Amino acid sequence: MVTGDSFATDISLITNNDLKLVSKKSGWGFNWRDEFKRPECDIYKLTIVNNPTVIQGLVCLEVKTDHLYMHLVESAPFNKGKIKMYSGVAGNLVAFACKLSFQRGHSGNVSFLSKTQLVEHYEKTLGAFHFGGRVMIIETQSALKLINKYFQNP
Image (tube, rainbow, N blue to C red; front, side, top):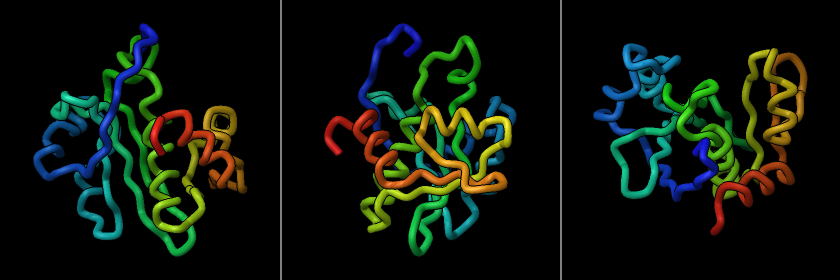
């Protein structure tokens, strides 16, 4: 939270009912319904423990042969900008992607495409490295750091 408070979170698969809450009409930037229809992808939602109806952020992940590919990550509209309610939402979701990569036997490796103006931001905040073009990669050591930051019991 912007106040410095920290809350226990849950990450779970999004449901069809959740899609009504994450529309462009309600301020979300991406069309999550389109992502939900992709059979190769899973969408996970971040919620605060004991408050499962308020989605703090979403991430769309695809398990590849040797890594996880992060299609999209987005904080809820109220967690964006200078007056956000909670910070660290996207970092928490990326750390989850790294954790899932380890669970799938991919050594924590996660790749994603960056908006070009965010390359340096992702290098600093996630420990990702710029592979070329818009491709960013999080490797094992950076993945472990993120997991340790966001998950007390990995």
